[in-house]
Amino acid sequence: FPANVALENSSLYKNNRGEYVYNLFYSNNEKGQYNYVSLSANAKDGKLLNYNCTNSPDNNITLSESQKQSAKEKTEKFLLYVAEEEFKSIQLGTERENGSLLNKYYQRMVNGIKHLNNGISVTFDAKASVVTYFSLTFTDGVFETPEKAIDKDTAYNNLLSYSPVAKMYVRVGGTY
Image (tube, rainbow, N blue to C red; front, side, top):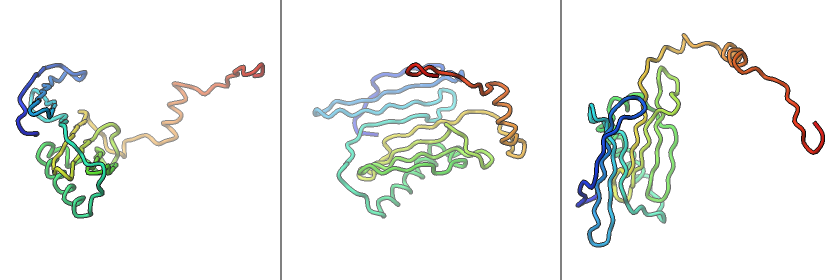
């Protein structure tokens, strides 16, 4: 959290899954420096869903291997603290370095299968040694074992039964 921020506004809303979510916005404008933190949390259990704060990353540096390792350890410690249960079912998907910022996306895995659009995004500023962004996207649901999945040919044939392939003629420049 940036120093000297105070709660500026808050809201409570119901998302499209019927869950209540608190949005909190903290800011300060002391000495001409604007700092803010915005976060969202599940109103029922307090689970952190999103976190974003200002920082001044250094885009002109290249991190050493020891800085990257320290950032990895601190990021994982943060994730274990705010999303311990979810951390058990993720694997690193993508990783980008941008100056002092390390952006990571951890993909959710269910029964050894990637669960698309489910995971954790996190940004760590290695120079300031803080997490500056966090987003948790996990949907509820029951996941069968992979052995119960249909094969790819059956899936393809099912797709064609709902949306069959058809030959179409399109006129372009006077010809079809």
